[in-house]
Length: 321
Ligand SMILES: [Zn+2]
Image 1 (cartoon, rainbow, N blue to C red):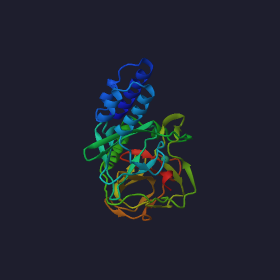
Image 2 (image 1 turned 90 degrees about the vertical axis):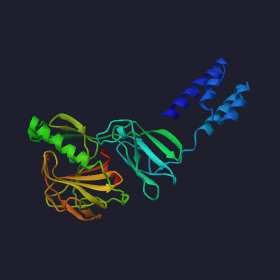
Image 3 (image 1 turned 60 degrees about the horizontal axis):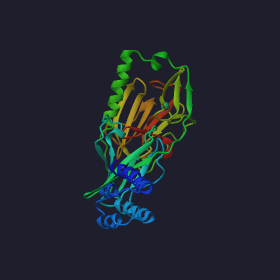
Image 4 (image 1 turned 90 degrees about the horizontal axis):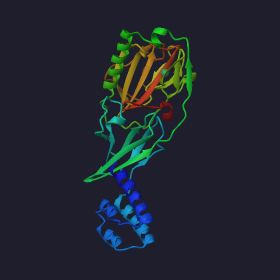
């Protein structure tokens, strides 16, 4: 944020220097570290020279931004980033969804090859990251690319599941808290970069991630995952290596549910299952049998509701396969 403030102030002051020919001391106080340039600057009254000098000042005042990403920062996407050795990257806690809304900085873990992962929320307009290297620190805000999301009309659900009574609403809240807690701590053993489809035998994608759901004509949040339709009993396979972080035999909305920790904050969940074939804390390899497709919880037909989150931030599973 500080650098953005500096840039805004700089352009305001530059505008004044050009249009009102006033003193530039306010500008150079923001760039006090560039003493030689500024002294020369102060004594030079040619506007063109001033513009060139401002350009030089700005160039030298902002160290190069070394961070690179594997793709554009787009709404609802999981992005892989690359740092230089010695660098660490931070995000504001309020950009995560693990129950902390402060602007404290959260250190994003990187692997031994200086790679890291970040999830972009579906409704994000921008993401601010801070990179630290020794005593230097750089902060930059990246604009997030918009994408359009489907609208999904779902009718015929039992009314008690769409508009739950207070007791069931409490159950939903408790169960979502269990999921959120299970997602707070991730392992950092393997980097989850290779993904496959958890239901290779699915017949169709019956609902896409992010689609605005209108359940029995009531508008709900964007769909949190990808729905893979398949007959009851179709195998559900681990799409990447991981560890079973939570198992629930009967959640109100999601029925038989599995949560897998893939490391570096990335979790996947499997809902409406007919059977569960893994145990809590079990290590799974990509392709291992997790369970089978079912219709438990709130579902109008047999399908796997598959989610991917990064520290609770929901991203589009389809992007990964
Ligand atoms: Zn779903």
